[in-house]
Length: 138
Image (tube, rainbow, N blue to C red):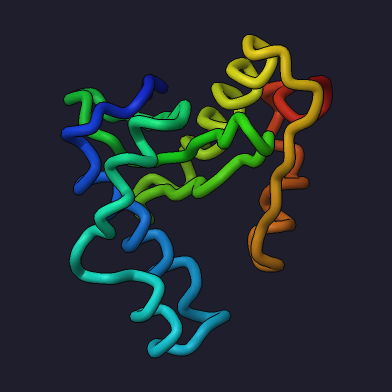
C-alpha cells in the first residue's frame, strides 16, 4: 500500500470511500436517518475543491486505486476526514495517512496538529499499532 496526494479526478472515488466508511463504521452509533443525511448519494460540489485546496492524501492499492483518504487543513492544523473502505480497515491505511499528514505538518513548519474523533474511534487512535511516530513527536 502506498500513500500519495489525491488527484482532483479522484474526487468521486474519495467521496464514495467517505460514505462507505461512515455507513459501515457509524451504524452502531447513529440512526440510519443521521447516516443518510451525512452520506449523500451525490458528491457535494465543494468536495473536489477540498482536494485541490488542501494536502489531501490517499492510500492506494496495487492498481493505484484509493482505498482510504485523509487531509490536513493547514490554516487550522486540523486533521480532517480519515476514512477507510471497510475491506481495508485492518491494514493500517488510516495510520499511514496520519503519518503522511504529520510529515506535511512538519514540512510546512506548523507547530500544532489537531485530531478529533468520534468516541468509537478514540480507542483506535490511542492503540499501540499506531506506531508510525506520527502522534508521539511533532
